Length: 98
Image (cartoon, rainbow, N blue to C red; front, side):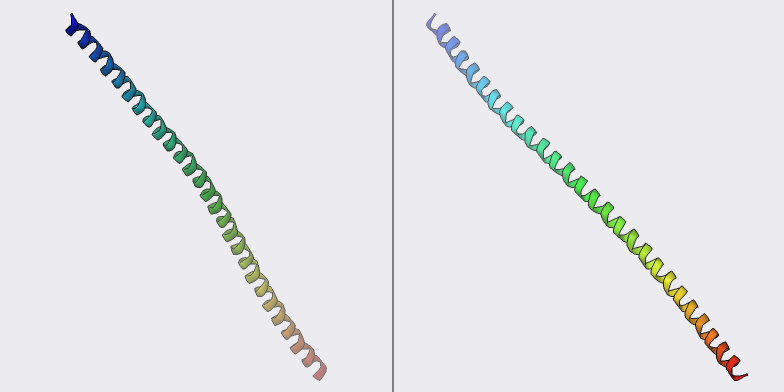
């Protein structure tokens, strides 16, 4: 009978130890899961920031290209006007000579 009580006690102690170990491992898994969730949220936040930055840079490049195109068009018009003024000036000088 003593042996039966001893085995029963040993099994209860082992059962308690296994429950404690399971609870500890469950807590470790929960901590790891929470850390992964936080890491994923951080990565999504950073991705969003990078996408915003990329869009901002694309907009800046577009605006720069538009300004450069306008600058080229303005320079072409200035050169055209300058050429026209030069031709008018030459024509005016011819008219004065006549």
